[in-house]
Length: 159
Image (cartoon, rainbow, N blue to C red; front, side, top):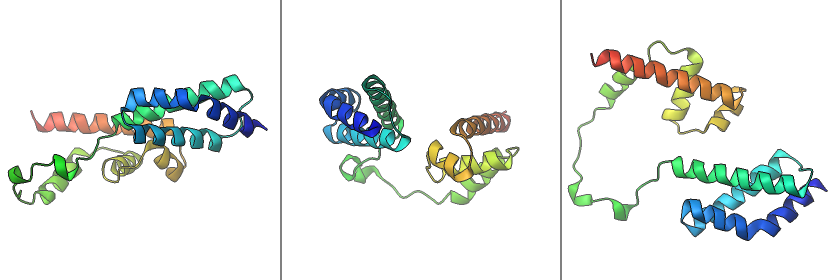
């Protein structure tokens, strides 16, 4: 019965939700994807008690999903790349690895693991939290501390 309330509210508010998502994302396909993600996330999280609760949760989750999508860096398409101006760069991967390990000195094991999963693997906080059996807030806190330590190490290198 409670999932029916969510479904009914979603169907009733779909046009308003879509317009709201379009206001954020400016792309019809992205807005539709955000709507789908919103409904799935709420449906997965469990029942709602009332139509008002369903409405409030739908708009709040949609807003957060849209903001997350806007924050995520957008990949460039082949048409946007200027192929003539691209030159082959020398391989600095070994130097980058040394610099990255130097900057990461002083991190705890969990901070290093979280930093690696976010920076190198592109994982989301929620994925890391479930993989490491931690709360999302704990993952965010550890990542914040890791960034601060790396920033401090970088400042020490540039003195």
